[in-house]
Image 1: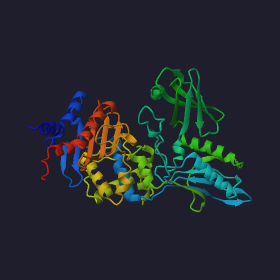
Image 2 (image 1 turned 60 degrees about the horizontal axis):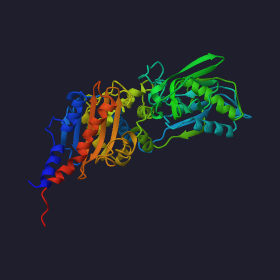
Image 3 (image 1 turned 180 degrees about the vertical axis):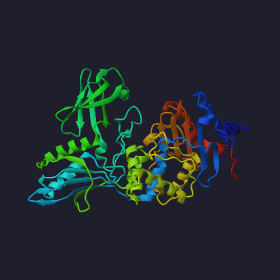
Image 4 (image 1 turned 120 degrees about the horizontal axis):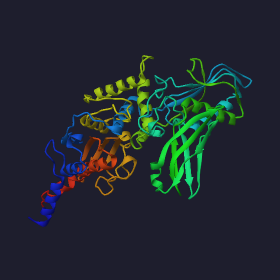
Length: 488
């Protein structure tokens, strides 16, 4: 055997195709080293060109997918709502406007607009002032009625121990600034300074953070959920708790103020800046049919929004898009929007001929302990994504390995780097990947893998899944190395 053939034989052994139900040896070794049983992992690898399955290990087992379920939600939304779909937030008036006085209500109606932040809210109020409104004799009404129920967050227990962070925000049809206060923190050796935006009337933030020796990159290790409490006379005090590193600069956003109070206090600050008067209440309600449009904000097109869903794994945005699919199909005003959204997704799967057995949908984002999907079902979704009308928009929304999104720090030394597109998913006890991996011959494979196990911590499970991606990416090199030389 020549040296070249010997090297090629070693390479082929490393990348050799396992038996039908077996996992590749490098993946098995990683699982065993992590004390994770083989049956905690389910995976399927299929060649994109002809659908041939080259690896299948429990492919029909329903698994917790974490955020890889966003691939199903985003693709169904692209095809159901259309790539040019935009959410809208409208400002309306009821009653007559006489001499600058609105003798009725000013109404803010949510329309699934994922980009409506406090700056845009201020712009709408400026436009209302430019339309001649100098005083409101009625109320300021918040209309979230596009989704049923309007406030799914009310009474819903926190998903985990950090309910204040953005990923845990349960959205509604308005989602004003995602109900978040941004907090920028900067410390020296002895002092901590911070700034909060937006300013809310009657809301004060105080720091009880203790300065400690810790790496700035690990500042969240000492963070505790801020405590918000009413202290009388309409004042809310938010206390920042825990520890913060010395000589550190960091930013975070927190959801700690009830969203009606958030809208109320923000409206009063922004409206007062216009130099106009308001003596009414801020309340939940619904715009009457004869309310007149005053101003409107329009979100980015869905083609841009799905990049937030898949590259940045934005849970609130995903959940708004999921519910919007339901709201767009509503024929029964009493029907729950989440149920209608699930019907839309299942109808899309049926149209594509994709088996939905074992599928459990909750909110479409993967931030759920109920959601389940089979790896072979998700593989079929990925196949539909590459052949559908909006394939370029869908594929470009997936993170590029070693470049961006959830894969930006992974597999930098692999042939998959800069070439594979992989959506990741992580929960406690869950780690998953799904996407497209080209090998070194240029053949592309659909790869789906999920690990459900108490030991599936991200630091433990991610290297196992990366090993699978790398194994697929290297297959072509091994086959090329043992190919017979071309005739002269």
